[in-house]
Image (tube, rainbow, N blue to C red):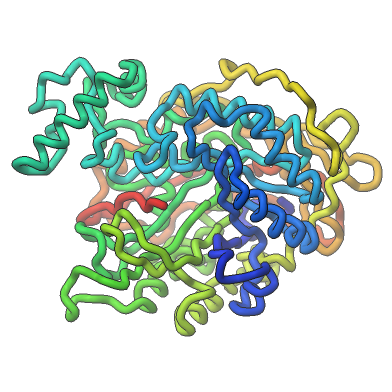
Length: 544
């Protein structure tokens, strides 16, 4: 990406394109020029999706910035075929978009999408789609992005249940469903009906601890991981919905909420950043984030926080790169593999709050909120060389995607009629006890300054921020230590964070004006201190 770990990260936005006719209108209206824009499409694409890409992609290419493509197989995973993939990739080739991130079938560990909680089918589909995108397009980067695992498997939804072996044992099967009377009876009936319709192996896969039921003690991530070969970046949707149930209360979030959610939380949830970013040497992207301000809050007026109070608290954590504080860790020191944040700049109703309209907006929101966003996101530090740590569009300037011969298809080229499906058995689902060295080097500078990496295929021209030496191999992962670290964190979750946490080692300083190959998986020394802070309750999923 041209920003070594610890020296900066890209800052993007997910916006309501119905309110902004062009990307330039958004920037002019907000003062914020995202390094990437998030675009949602269905797969297969509708006429609206096609028109949307025709509108956005030429602008992205002209600005030489990224685009994050959220691909939603709304008709099920089986509908995402090679032909569908080639059609989507063809748009990016046609408009010569240099680099784009494919967030395929996101939040697959939730229960609110048609592709939800189908581990084997999801892994196979992701691997196949990754192979097809890479064959059809020079600049596609595959992003695996579950929802934050707090509340998994999201009890209360009919798709959450125990394994078939315990259908008759309602005390054990539904012990964590805190409902009463007729509602609980209806839920049990729906759950048991679904158990009979779905193959038993699905639930056995989700029952990661083998206790015969699927509940919050099971791993919300590993059953869905497609394997290192198919994943270029790892990501996560991270929202602050308020610290108390029921959601819908306008309350300021708790200290260190953001970093606990992306990594180690005082619940039986694996430390996501430690396991998947550091342990597997993958760049980390926060694919959606904001803090909720409910327009029809349920808490009493004298107990409500204001929108600016809620957002300021979140921005203090989300953008902190100037030293640890009781409220927030320094992300540049403790989370250097965090390389991109996409802000969810929307005003929309949310199912998680019973349809209440939620104001997620930052740059496009109220004047005081927009000013706070601009202030906190403009922070820099010594590691970022005096530049803002959170880089916007003026720091990108991607080179045109002139693909090396045989590596992929040049812009405007027709994708192949048939591409062999990848060997999905080559990928693996990580276990907490498995330690592996996963990074691979192997980049080269192609004639004319075009860069090619094993997975990266990104170039930055002289106006971009670039760096060498990002292809270090992580020899022997610390993943094997995660089980012990997690157990210790859970036991000690009431302890406050020590102010002298060991920093991670950053890569070399940026080298301005030099066109170099970059391994997008980044590099890290593997060091990590797991910390958890006590809290009264956990926030659940944000749903579209």
